[in-house]
View 1 (cartoon, one colour):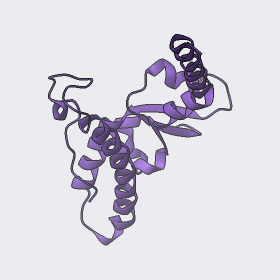
View 2 (cartoon, helix red, strand yellow):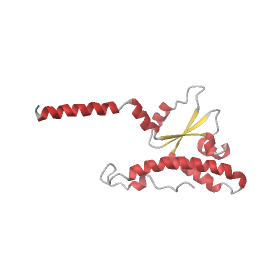
View 3 (cartoon, helix red, strand yellow):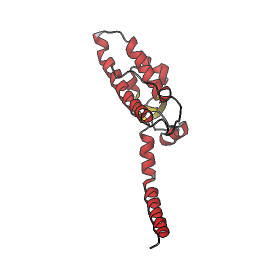
View 4 (cartoon, rainbow, N blue to C red):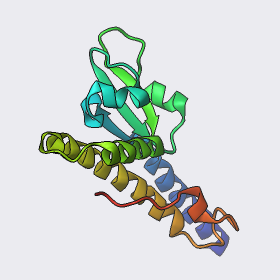
Length: 162
């Protein structure tokens, strides 16, 4: 068998294997890895969460995202049909900064300790998602992808969970 024919045969096999890996399920998993679904209560009582999320609805869900477009979010989480959850979309960094501010300003009393623990758990979930994406960006070689852009300015380091 000539070398050129073997090359074309091998190339076509690799193409079809790669094409089969690009199914709708793999694209869905890639998108879902960019969002963190939470509840309204994960951000504290309504008085604490209202500046970030707005007023509480009957069945409010919070979708925290990073690296997803608004149209893709609205496609995966439709909000127009009645009876479906009321979705609120916030960016990962705005959720993290809001939680940092609320935990810092929460008075240190024994009555606030359960609320503080709940806010810390939410912060920990968001920090894990952010740090996973940040490490993936920063760990690429400098000659790959972003070029000469200072990568730590794209996704700055954030304080670890308290």
